[in-house]
Length: 339
Ligand code: PHE
Image (cartoon, rainbow, N blue to C red; front, top):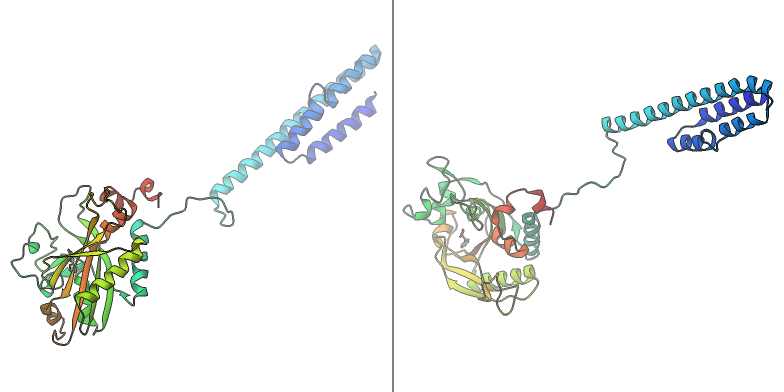
């Protein structure tokens, strides 16, 4: 060992260190040169073989080498750390749209899913989807629907009145009127939408819920047409053949008025959904009342029609076995994540 060799080694180490650019390269360098078995320790071991005079010269030289390389190593370590930090900070500052990393995906609300499903079934039968405002005048929600002035549904307890004439619709049947006022028969529409009633909320009631209205107006329309349409819709929707049961029901805007039940799509012997009865109550329906046709400037002698309306909220709760209506309207991520 001599001064020349030490100098050569120093230059080689400095060169190698300057080329180090990552943390793992840095660690490789440390293991190879700076540990007890490393290059520097090895050259120190060589001191033993020198005589006293040489030791006096080479000792300080080796110490200087060790000090310098250690200092350069620390400096390089700091540089690499700073570079890494800057990359991390820049990443936060700038959003790189090209980076693909898994993010939480949204999903369709159960209302949207069921609405789309129902719409596509009715559209395949030639129905069109209609829409109407949620804020309506008394005429559309009551008068045109043949609901007399003294009907209890007009009372404050059920209806959110905005002023003496305007209110939040309590039923989607308003869309029947809006459609018939603007369109001449044949009319075949369905109208999903929100309805509002001034009610206390609990697990099965909310002041806002969704309904689904259907209206068909043409010539010689009968209850048989209504039942065939509903049977075909329900069988497709539930994915199995359902039978219908018809009971008389009173709705001022239809005559005759019907309550329609279907065989429980979830069981054959009785279950918790049908409360062991094997039937589920589904909707109100009937033939459009002549007075309603007249209010829409249609001649009841010429035209007839059927209408039905069911609780979309109820159907969604049935389909997904949702026990509390308020969950549906809560926007809670934990709840929505399941769909
Ligand atoms: N609008 C009625 C309700 O809210 C349902 C209905 C619609 C009944 C159409 C008959 C015909 O209960």
